[in-house]
Image 1 (cartoon, one colour):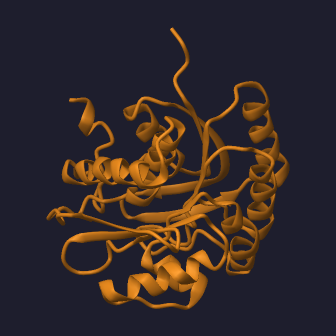
Image 2 (cartoon, rainbow, N blue to C red):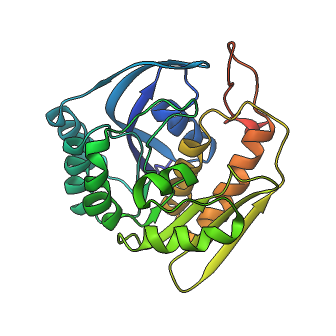
Length: 262
């Protein structure tokens, strides 16, 4: 049996299993690719929030990346929580030397509002990480953090996309899940636009949606899909996962990564 496409996540750990590397690897398994990981940080995290976070040394991140890429190889890379300017720049350097699609989820805060990226790292995200992204996937809070563009309606999403594209990613996927109404996202490369809509499910168990979506995009890109098709397939997957989300603990439960395997 030949090996499936290989996807590498470079992200933090979620001890509760709903987001981070744990969500990434579950998504990759559900979508039929081989998931691999570079751990950037360890968090103490559950359904109520993040109780602590500990960044790994840049040397450890670099060693994990080289160990996997130089031996096993990779067809796509996804980045998540990178914590500090040093880690952002380390990962950007590594990605620059890896000729595969890259999905950058510029994680700034957790679903509960806990900070996961130092303010001092924002310039590095803008100048080093976003320019090497095939697809950048910020939500509206992350758009505001990176660009100072505040979006409160669907009409403002084009302006948000323009501001993100100015930093150099080939495509920007502006996630409008925080807006009222249907869950609408805008994917654009500055010339073509793709609006992706899905019904909003009456479900508070949405922990890990951003990680899941970015990992699903990377998985579909690793299979050889073009960006618009990969993003559409990923949107369908995460919509199903949200619809099947379940209660876990006393706070926000996770999406159901295995919903499509029933």
